[in-house]
Amino acid sequence: MIITQSRDWERIEADLDEIGASRVFIMGCGQCATVASTGGEKEVLEAKAKLEASGRTVTGWTIGEVTCHSGGTGLDTRKRSGDIEAAEAVLVLACGAGVQTVADAIAKPVFPGLESVFLGNVVRHGVFEERCQMCGECVLDKTAGICPVTTCPKGLLNGPCGGMWDGKCEVVVDRECTHVLIQRRLVEQGRHAQEVLSPKDYSKKLKPGSVNLREKKGGSR
Ligand code: SF4
Ligand code: SF4
Image 1 (spheres, rainbow, N blue to C red):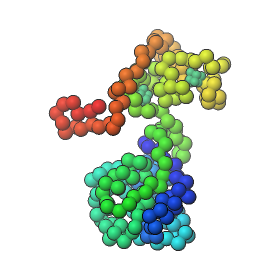
Image 2 (cartoon, rainbow, N blue to C red):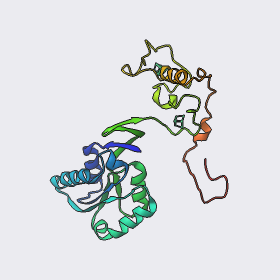
Image 3 (tube, rainbow, N blue to C red):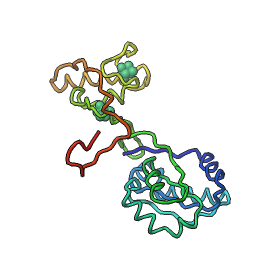
Image 4 (cartoon, protein in one colour):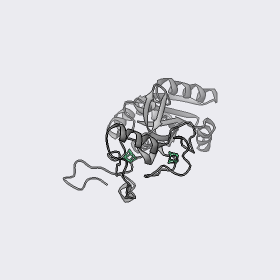
């Protein structure tokens, strides 16, 4: 899921002040931002209270089912078109993809209420860890299911680096070195020690990414 954190509230107020918006509509997200406790109903109502405390009027709010889904967000915004029309700005408590989906769906100025920080695993309730940077050329088959690109702070495909000490990472000192973990798991699974991995082909990580399942072939990059 996309991990988000609350945006500096002063920045949000400054964005709204910049366009002189005294009437605001708020949209959250029922998926990632709800799980991350940044854009669910509780957080939307907290944002509403803060906006009202600063003298603004909240014309309405809603929680998109999946705010980054164009069709669903188009439907949600049409259902609330009166409240959105009455607002001078829309504050979106969703990831950057969700914010852009809302901005595409309506003509009003749209502002992000969150910072999108990484694609993360839910380790347990309220604890998220980055495990994949979506590099486009996965090496987990060679690394016992542990991603060196993401979990080694230096992003080293081959390691450990010279700073590893007693199995610990020199950068995140309370964590075990990714490459020690990889070697240990490979051995535990009766597999060969990690082979030297070739440099990755980062051209496979072209931006903007696009996958079109409707095209017969060549629909991804
Ligand atoms: S190698 Fe790591 S960053 Fe790349 S796709 Fe696999 S898990 Fe994601
Ligand atoms: S100690 Fe290991 S995990 Fe830490 S930066 Fe060096 S190779 Fe990467």
